[in-house]
Image (cartoon, rainbow, N blue to C red):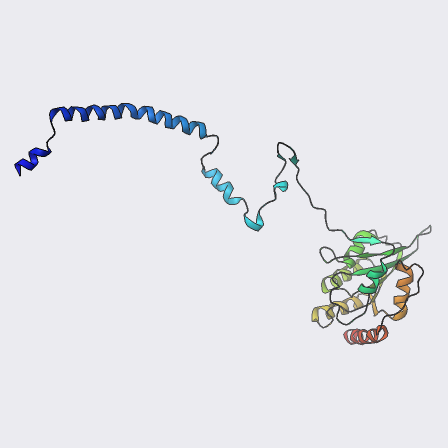
Length: 273
């Protein structure tokens, strides 16, 4: 045991060398830390540390589908160009004097199942009477895509927004579809507010006529003084000649035009009885 222990004891010279090496390490350590800190200082501008504020900002920034587009965050300068904030245009109702004949033949066709007809076409004619001077009437059409205001509401926002209670208005519509429940309720409010206005609605088709709220809306419209009826073949001919770019061609009724009118007229009479 003594031999093993003694064999592990280093000589005096060996101990001195080890101590010298240890001193050298202690002396070199501050220099290495200085160089390391110097490198950190140079890279500090490249990789800023995450502070609690930065973490909070990152958490508040939407990710994935909710991420804000670069152009919408504000001006972003680049070496070659500058991105400006992009503002999308608001939803617009299309208004005109005469519509495309293809649109008319598709949108106004009084079929029972109106697949693919996801917008409303509204042809209007406004007769205005009263006042001291001659008052010119209004005529044209508008359409919507069910992305904002429906055509019925848009008419009173963009066509007949101004109302003079000293004048008498007779408004006649030829629509590709009857009003929805929401539009019917708004029309009732407008008719109650505009006592000197009369509204006549001629519909090509009935919109979801089996739904209770739709039926109730049409009934409320009639109680408010609105006259609703289905478009007959002669009405389609009138719309064709008055509101369509027909190039002086005569209107040719599509197959089952009369039968479809009879079908819808029976449904409407059942709702309004």
